[in-house]
Image (cartoon, rainbow, N blue to C red):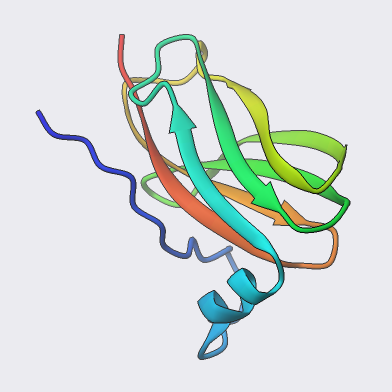
Length: 116
């Protein structure tokens, strides 16, 4: 079974669609998703990302139906490669989408798997 990291936008309920070029803006805003490890996860995984400045970070986890299943307040993170631990012990086996969001609205997304 081949699992690959995929980055795409997760629409929020009631949110307008992303503007054209939003992905380029996210990269230009200095936020980049670096994947999760381990992936697939059992009890926990680390969502890895890179920042070019200090920012307040939130990680949100969505199921494949787009429902928010977990929110992690990562607090202030300084520039550089960072990781926030996500507790997956309470999640069912399956695919999930994570979103790393900064206090200025910049966000990147990726996919992770949970197995038992």
